[in-house]
Image 1: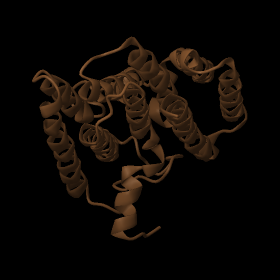
Image 2 (image 1 turned 180 degrees about the horizontal axis):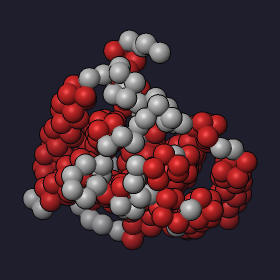
Image 3 (image 1 turned 120 degrees about the vertical axis):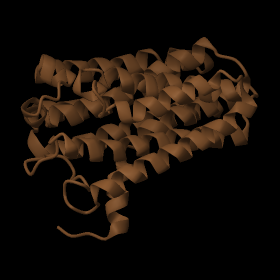
Length: 292
């Protein structure tokens, strides 16, 4: 299937999964606003760092998974740009580092709002983007993908977005970062659950390959429950009635979780999109309860 270059680059960025990077930043900003510490400039810089870093990671995965043979003709997920012939491998690799540079440039702007040691966080992000699927020990191929998502789509973006605005770390930010991180891990679980056979064939040792699909289904449900549990600081800010909102969200998660039990193959692409949607909905729920 031939598509335009613009659509090819948009597809490579995987916009339907970007809720994983946007969500924690929005929640951190809402918490900062509640505590009278919200600042527009560092907030926007954090948003750009998160978005550029995830897009760079998606582009890198597109390139390196193709090189490792993980994106063959039997791929069940959304078509990859390099494997489909839409974008040349060299162009994809170049774009990866350009977008990663933009993330680093925005990160340098945050040095004006925090201590110099923030550069260590930037270095960690810059190194983990290619290390996720490349190098002698690619993290995604050795069972560390879930941990990386929890760190880089939960703990780090939420805690540090709050820090550069408020000038301090808080336990509330930490618990909420876990909440968002666990939900984002579910995006990866669905992706790896769908690609179980293909990943196993090329030696990509995801947690699903290591422990099986049943483990993935259980972990998905546990993460959904943990996300609601670790949002407990928000309950302290509002009356008991908000429990119904979180129970409603958990029911939504349960409906999505059922897909892992009854759907297989490319049909799970819709489940992946719904899981990403749930991450964004949960972030917006937390934002509304924190800021209003």
